[in-house]
Amino acid sequence: MPFFYPYYNPYAIVVLPAIILALYAQIKVQSTFQRYLQVRAQSGLTGADVARTLLRNQGLEGVRVEAIPGKLTDHYDPRDRTLRLSQQVFYGNSLAALGVAAHETGHALQHANDYVPLSVRSSLVPAANIGSQLGFPLALFGFFFQSGFMLQLGIILFSLAVLFQLVTLPVEFNASSRALGLLEGEGILAHDEIGGARAVLSAAALTYVAATLSAVLQLVRLLLMSGMLNRRND
Image (spheres, rainbow, N blue to C red):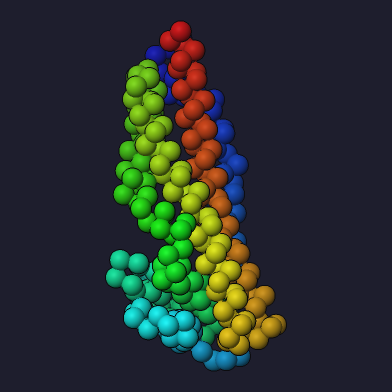
């Protein structure tokens, strides 16, 4: 058996469904966001207005709302309690802008309410960063040089990144659920506008599903490679 054969193993095809889903998710989120970016909300409120209104109504006036450069760079930073919105969302008054602003506000509410999955995800960040950067390369290195120890260490580290992705799903789904409930419950969006905001958030959620599936299938691939190496060394 050639020395380089272990590197070119048949298990790479395992991640093909995740690659296809990820490509579809990116196309879906971009097209859906652009579509509802053109639909103005009847209220005339901007994303910044909505975020500040929801935060104030929920008693979270200490959370700052800032504009940042980039497209779809919106996020909530729990470290300094700052909600950062891309300029299209911060200044925009479209259904897409309001949906995204409310979603990020949902994360601020999770933080204030000590939402357990968010706390778990935050605690996993350092380990997940190490796992995502070193885990997979280390496992491939171990497989290539037929080192079971290096391969297993890489799998353990990469598993932390997979766990982070799994915990991210309920965090994101819950933030979207909170957002839609607040937008409709507080009368910011009319009943016939909620569908547009829901479509934007559903498309965004698909990207997290794709990322999680990719991480899980990569882990499965590494486990199959570990089994192949063990059989070869027996």
